[in-house]
Length: 79
Length: 235
Figure 1 (cartoon, helix red, strand yellow):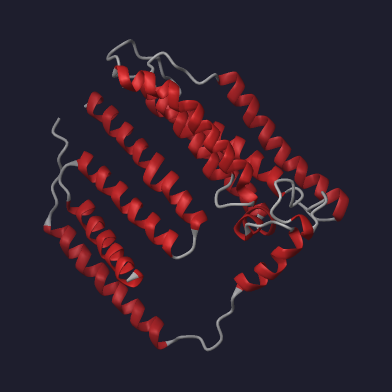
Figure 2: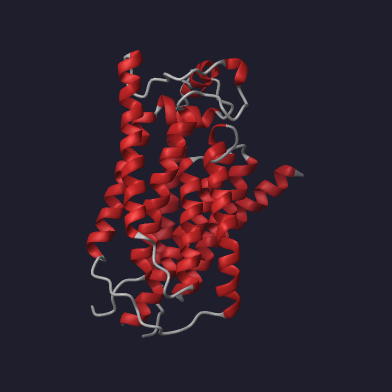
């Protein structure tokens, strides 16, 4: 059962990563990028790396995506 | 401007090419599996018991690879310096748009809790998952929340620079004291008895170093976030 959940998470991460690359709207890309980070957090946690999971949650899914969003907003104001 | 981009057939062919490359590398790797895999992790884990720290990852990051952590902090410092140089000519924006009432009030309520959680992650870095980097970034995300919600809020520059200087100097000082006392940069000169493993005051200098790292990362990330949000509009 756990194996199935892990497999489903793997497939979901790959699908969301693919969607991130082919997504046409930039804000949606960032939200999907957060989704990739979230899936990675689950995988890291399941594979007994809670330190890496916490780092990924805080930096990968959290603050880097927020910085992307801020940069996009400013870009919109400038152009 | 329309924030859309074109996804050409090149992207898809790039996907196909990288899949091919990955399959080739996997094939080569599977054919040449080494008979005896060297595992550095087990050696480090057996050494970990001598330091009396419950979280083995912290021992590796702060103690066995403490010098690398110093380098990582230097890299982060250079990144903050570069962002400060590039975006330094910021002028505080006028009241363009007031943020939402709920966001204004809730951020004031949430900020202390976020900072408390960050400090917890930082101080308990040698007992539970987490540590200086994560705690510092959590505190910086609290600062980001305040910056988004309140247009007039500004990170106090003098306090931040004092904290950062203090943290950087004390990291190197702790390392140098270790060099003086037990001939080893970042040597563990404080008592670190194995019987105290799991206590808050255990592991000698390792919690101290992680707290210092947390202060440094938190202040640098806060400055980066402030520079990103409050940059000038004139270019």
